[in-house]
Structure formats: C-alpha cells, structure tokens
Image (cartoon, rainbow over all chains, first blue to last red; front, side, top):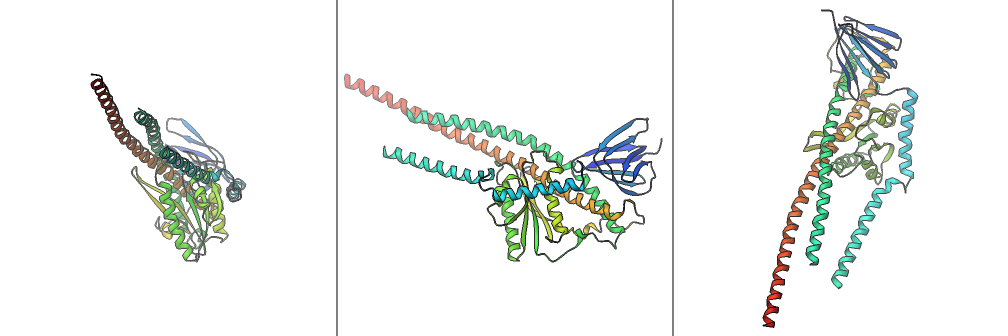
Length: 140
Length: 288
C-alpha cells in the first residue's frame, strides 16, 4: 500500500471533499505546489484555480476553488476554500453596498420598509370598520 | 336560517385557513431539516480556522493581532440577525427584547451603539429606535451565501480596526431543538483570549507564504465572517422550527374552533327544525 495523506477541502458553506489521496496539486500564491505525504508544515494563500487530487488506483479528482488557504501538515492537508471570488476591492464594494442600503433605509420614509406601518394602519382601519358594522347591526 | 348559514360560511373559511397553516407547517418542517444540515456543514470550516489561528497565536507570542486587544469600551457594534418573513411565533420579538435589554445596559453606561441589520424584521423594528444603523442586508432567502453577509461584516471590522467601535456583538437565535430556540447576544470582538490557549505548545512552525501577518489578518476576517454566517444559518433553522410549531398550533386551534362551530351549527339546525314542527303542529291545532 502506498503512503497516503488525508485531504479535507472545506468552505464556510459546506465540506467539499474529505478523504485519502497520494498527492495533492494546487496553485499557491507564490507558485504551484505538489504535496505528498510527509510534507513539512506550510500555510499559504491559494490563487483561484484547480486542486488536483491523485488517488491510489491512478484515478484523479479535480476541484475548482475561487481562492482561500491551505494548511499542510505531514499527514493532513486542509484547504480552507473561499466560496466566491474574494479580493480587497470586491469586499470593499460589498461593504459600500451594505452601508448604502442602510442609508437608503434611513432616508426613504415612504419606501417598502414602511410596510409595517401601513399594515398597522390597515389593521386599525379594519377594526374600525368592524366596530361600525357591529354598531349598525345593533341599531337595526 | 341566517344564523346557521353564517356559521356554515365561518366553518368554511376556517377550514381554508387550516389548509394553509397545515401546508406551511409541512413546508417549514422540510426547510428546517435542510437548514439544520447547512448548519452542520458550516461548522468544520470555523473549527479548522480556529485551530490554525490558535496555532499561529501560540507560535508568535510577540505578535498580537488587534482582534485580541481589549480596549475601554466607548462604542459597540451590534450585528442584529433576524428573519425576512413573519409568521414564526415569537422568535424575532424574543430576540429583540433580549437585545433591547442589553442595549439599555449599554446606554446606561454611556456606550453608544452602531448596528448592522440582517433580515427584514430587524429593519422594520430597529428603524423606530434611535440607534445608528451603519449597514444592512435583507432578502437572504433560505440558503444564504457568505457573499451575502460579507458587506455587513466588513463595515463592522473596518470600524473595529479604525478604533470607531471597541467591541462587536452578534444577536441571533440559538437552535437548541425543534421546540426550543434561545435568543442570545454574543461577543465576537475582541476575541476571547481562550483562543490563544487552544492548541497548546508546539515545537514547530509553519512555513508561511507570504508572511505570517498577511495570512493571519485574512484568516481572522474569514473567521469572523464564518461566525456571522453560522449565526445567520442557525437563525434560519430557528425560523423554520419556530414557524413549524406556530403553524402546528394554529392548525390545532382551527380544529377546535371548527368543532365548536359545528356543535353550534347543529344546535341551531335542530332548534330551527323543532320550531318549524311546533309551528306546524300549532297551525294544525288552530285549523282543527
């Protein structure tokens, strides 16, 4: 039996792969890495790209990841994959988006958020109509 | 008779309502199972990152990441997680009550609050309060992605790094079981120093590519993001569980209501028949 190394590919949303492999090939930030059992401890960022796993029976499996980290220990490789393309400017845009949405919320007094107030008013009006209807019934 | 007709139409409308609540109960049950799975799936990532962070923190005792710094608290950040839709019992309200109590404590200590809102319900509720809203994310759906919450988290992390806020909290529901959901307000930042002692002493260190500081910076951000993501996913599981229970009791209530009405209907019908017979008999007596 050949030497194998445990491979875990996890993302914040799910576990993508977990199992044994002979070798792992991936794109680190500073270049391509080929990892076999007994590799020294290493922590590096990953570029968006493919992770290729080699199995005992000469089979292969390929995963695409959009960046992340890999933590390597002699007997285990853990890929912490990002779920979406992440870059400083993309994150920044998302933050701006979240902030703008909050600002819109504060300014926009008649927007869809006022739904709650409208609902409350509607409930009040309905209650009034019901009360009037009941009064009319009694008078009749 | 008008009364028996009224009752019949009322029974009809309750029956329709019951059909809807039963359908919602079943839908919530299946969605809850999926949300629970998603909750379990997101856990290994956070655990692994925590391990790595613990290790780095241990082997670089001279470098303290700003996320571990405990500063005097003048202003806090609050990430408020809520559901997008209603009809889920007291889930949101219980959480808001708990959070408001916490906010009142802060205000007593003259601590100001910046809040980020996730979900429509928090938006509708917190708009009426006088707290600073600095970020918002709504319409996440049943299966939110990390990308949906990145913006909100980034706003808060930037504020923490710039010293605008001195602590970060997240308010969300904890899924205990189908019948029980617990509202909780937890501290995210500064990280409890327990993380430091997590992995014990090591006699080796990683080879870092690129340097360790860059890596730990990003890992920290990812960790907080995954924590918030987990909170959101857990809250969705809570929402579905709570909706399931609420809809089940609504269905049961509709059943009892219908039984009572049916009894009233039968009584009214029998009374009408008896009166008719009495009228006929007395009419016959008068003729004879």
